[in-house]
Length: 401
Image (cartoon, rainbow, N blue to C red):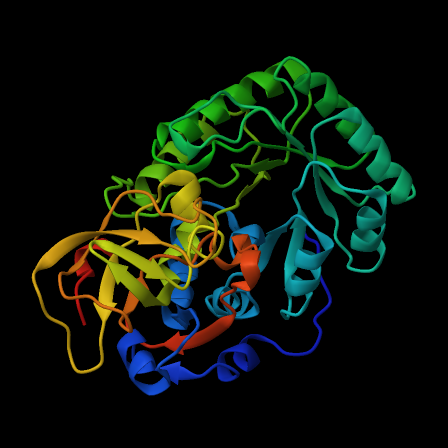
């Protein structure tokens, strides 16, 4: 399942050197007094996260680029030893191609012909996901009947205990999957199975259940699947989220793999996104106005905090005030900067009671689905990234600084 992309200018070391660096977010605020939102990236956390996931997972880890495609994020994961990337567009393919020895896997089940042509002929990608016969025909036609491919069949799954259900849009029906798998095997290319249990999955057993479904498909297909990709969905431990440790998911995956027909040469893959990058970045915003216990910020639901609005993700927060912050904790409703009333954030956030206009607030664990979901509505956008050297801002560490 190897698809090597050519490296182009830049690279991991260049990306880290190109950013300003500070001891922590408070040092950044003290030095810059930013008027616009600022992402605080923690390269060391990225490197450690990549290394730990690869240490525990019984196979190859490929990062889901959709989660955060910033060049410095990709570079940090690369510096942690990660070389495989799950891509879904030409833009993501080009971003990965900037990394030396990068390996891209085109795991979007629906791709246009030009994208397949460029992916195969220009970028050398050899791994493609699909979930219907027409996509298989398309890939074979565009690649000239290639026989050097890994064709991975995505299978639809029932809804599991995940915050974001991903069933329904993609995936071959279980009843149709054996026939599609036989058709893939008949092309002379390497066949595989994949699935997605849903984003921010909180039940490790979902992976064992999904692999049990795959075992049934293989038994009915009568052909092998040298590649098994267990997809993404590995969770981050946000505020109020009882996310099991990675070891629990790995144990469930091992148990599920044991249910498959034996294949000593089988390659196993996964596609984590959120679990790799969430803790590696925080966002610093400025308080523009206070009205009672309502705070109006310079970023919100149309920007970096979209995941908070869409899925009620609760990030750890702390007040940043040069010279020190004080006051007992109080609860505040938060609003974004646009003129739309939709630009409000669910629930309340605990902050010192004396928070006021001109203060800064740091949102931790915001490395996933933040900058990539920005809309630029009303012209508001967070573009600045800096590097910071401290550890991740986790729920237990949220406080005034």
